[in-house]
Image 1: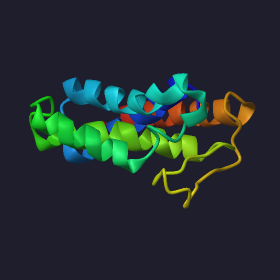
Image 2: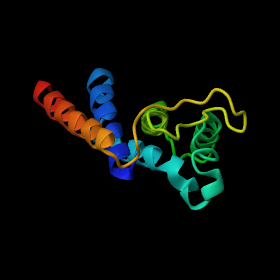
Image 3: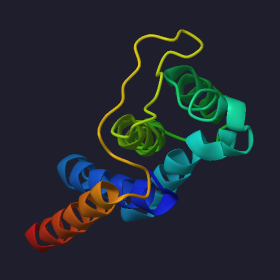
Length: 138
């Protein structure tokens, strides 16, 4: 998925979880950081969707975040994880997919969506409608 699609997906998930779990809106920055982290490997073409698109990197960032006090409470870690995992879910819908346990090659999750294609834009449109709808419910 493209960067903006990931951000919109993370925002929808954050709105839903924020409403259910009563998260503060200022914490959204941690979700947006989480949603952007997996694409840090984009410059390394050979390793894109491998090096940072796995659960081990999430665990590493959570460990570092709590160790250095960046994640100052459990809520921050949860919100960061929501962003990160929503990115993985989004990319798992695409043709290229993800290997969430990389360097272990299986399981691999992929779907019918072409990155930057019509399907992705339809998903984004649906997400925006859901965000609007969720906003009217709060």
